[in-house]
Image (tube, rainbow, N blue to C red; front, side):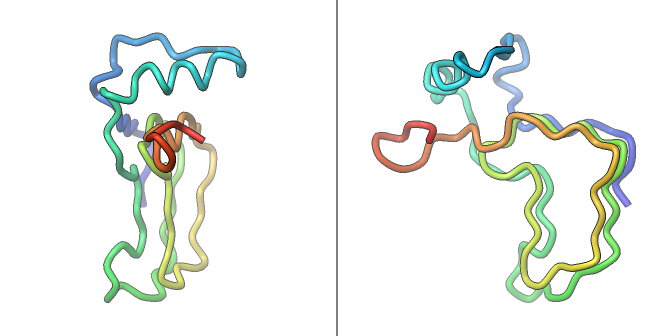
Length: 102
């Protein structure tokens, strides 16, 4: 069980003010690409040998600023729970054409 703490994936943005309007999000992400690290905050089943992971509980968490997914479950991870948590600013690392955020 993961319960009651913060994971912030972007230590280089610690003193930045995140935008509060949707219209400002893309320009914020684009302007800070040089500081943003790629990665996932919680990755269940990341190893190809990890299969059928069940019963993981993520509760009362504050997850902020993943370069990729904030939470990723793969390799037939089932029966897991995410509850009573704040999950924001996921997918910040630009991938694709010209490394811009999509």
